[in-house]
Image 1 (cartoon, rainbow, N blue to C red):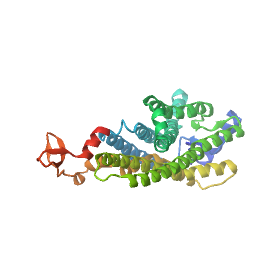
Image 2: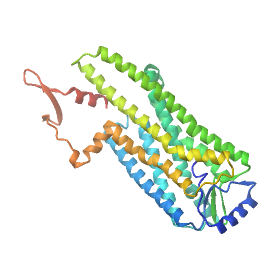
Image 3: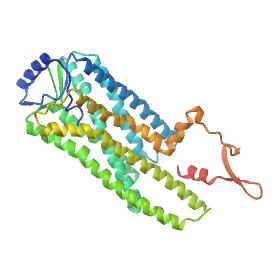
Image 4: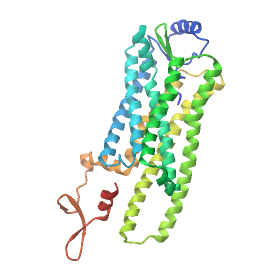
Amino acid sequence: MIQGWFEREMITEEDSTISHLSVAMATKAVDTTQTVTSSSFSDATFYFYCAQIVVGVVGTAGNALILYALVASKQHKKHIMIVNQNALDLFCCFFLVVTNVVRLCNIRLSGVLGYWLCITLLSEVFVSCGVYGATVNIAIITIDRYLKVVYPVLSKKIMRPWVIYSAVAFAWLVGIVFTIPLLFKTTAVIDGICWAFALYDSYETQMAVYSFYILFFYVFMLIIFTFCYWRILVTVRRQARVMARHNAAGSSTSTAQTISNQIESSVIKTMVLVAAFYAICYLPHMALSVGQMLVSNLIIPRSIDPLTRIASYLYITMNPFIYATKFDPVKEILKGMIPSCKQVSVQPVDDGVELGETTATGNAVRNPHTRYREEHL
């Protein structure tokens, strides 16, 4: 996603003309379709900001809830990258709310304070860093799932704890490294207007940057998703056929393996849906970006670009709901938070331990499902 680069702020024609003349005197080349925050905006822009605030609030609440469910279900240590994904989405949604609230305040930018307000908030740099980091994090999760399913022995050798935590740090740093230098190079406050990611030395430089971001953060990611999950699905189907032939009915080992496979399958299905949703949500914005790159004088309705941006923001907002409906451990915790969905256990409980079937002597034995969960989850 090219965060905010193709955004058209709906300023008046007079303000737009004055601003463009000022920028033309300050830089060699200016793209007049870039992110601009002026001291006044139309009703359409106002509603656009409000819509982004609503999306951000829903996403912040949803991601925070899923993070709680991951910790409560004791999945946060097993699925560190998934926790990191929700943390990045939460970061994006929170700053999406903060940024647009500041925009609605309609602050006249001047002096050092105005410059740093433009750099830190009005430019949406925090949202951009979070979005880029979340995109890379999804790719890392995809590769991790691919190695675990297709090359399990190699995965155990490679995916050490230090490698996982390094991947977490890399996902956070990649957005910063890609965004911050470009921000200071191409952003300025001119005549009280924040020109974010707009002031390039030349048109060729601008197109080179746009091309890199589109290819890396969308095309390359789709290639990773398609290849890895296609191989995963082929491998899972082959393993299912083998297990069906050698399954020993009633075996406790078989029961534990079945539970493990169900959890793994749940994670894979969740991440497939997340990757597919990523491709769909970002497609309109990417298509518009490519169109504007190929046709410099392309004329589009003012409402199209804001709609494509909101569609892309829906991705970080809807992610938690995907986890809630597809990731079984999280789903169980969330169901338990709803009074009408709380299940009353029919098994006897002795000192807080769930019991299963009884032996011929009347002694209770541990339920194999419960024992497996306690040992492995």
